[in-house]
Length: 119
Image (cartoon, rainbow, N blue to C red):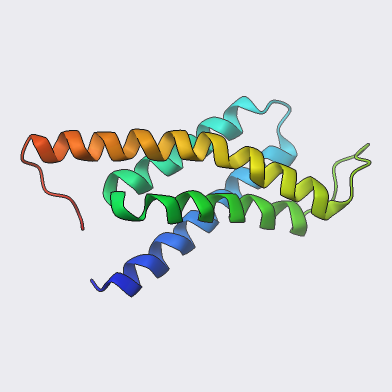
């Protein structure tokens, strides 16, 4: 698989997973599940493509932003749609980065054991 195809697939999948997490964030009462979804998604993306982990993190945040821009604002929200979406995307970067770091470390540990990466 070429590098361009990997980048396209990874960024599309990350944006889709981020949009799912963003929609969950808009409908859920607590933030915890959303953060776990972002961290787990970033972990899996980084585990299989550790060299493109940063792209996965950015794709997740972009997906969260898109979900917030496309959805109806939650009741009682006084922030403009773009501002609310940018804040949600910035918050999404933190658990996604932590999950990606854990995925990179797990991929390195697996490589140390002799397992081969997808790359």
